[in-house]
Length: 318
Image (cartoon, rainbow, N blue to C red; front, side, top):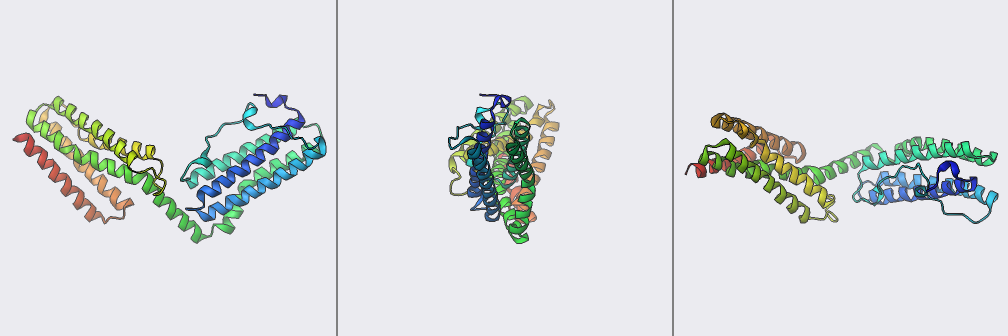
């Protein structure tokens, strides 16, 4: 890698041309990734990509005038000081907020690069163009706002916000809710069976811990292997699996922790209170994100939890 301070004027212009070309491709990648779910925002990034192409043309015309037709390949990764970003434009499906933040960071860094390059330029025409481009990058955020005002009408924004909400539910809420329900409900039977069979808080805690961790691992793998997300838009399998596995473990650990208390009945009463809180939280999530009426969600969850709870007590008392 080469230090920016050691670049010649020719190399600085070559790097600027390479940057503009890469940025335009990134914006087109964003547009392509957003097109299916967020068509209005995709059009904004298409127009921003066209703006980068115009910048590249200005730079290349000046380069050819100063140094001829040969253009050396100088890229960001060849120069020390450039921040490395993950290739977000390759991720599918793209998150709208993530993309906007990424684009804003790109524009800031590019504008800063042009200012540094202008300070290093000795030729007046090169320096003038670099300053103009720095100002243009500063205006990109306002350009995005103007394009957004023209393209992202209130109806388009509402539609895209609803799409973003649905994607959030598919990628995070559904696997997390499935895990929380499984962890909170399925571990009730072995936990309370062990409690009433042994009347030992420590042994009950170990059973609950094993059931919670085992259920978390099982649910995580089951969710990750069930769907690769390519057709359903539910996101990457490892992310869904991680969310589902963690929430399953949390759901089981919640009513297991009270059994660290040595007194059996105090621990059991506290565990029951925690179970009620967990089931109420599940009911609220189903009402808030899954459009299930709150009373219906509460009835379904409480009845299911009560049946599993009673099954555990009866088996443990047998």
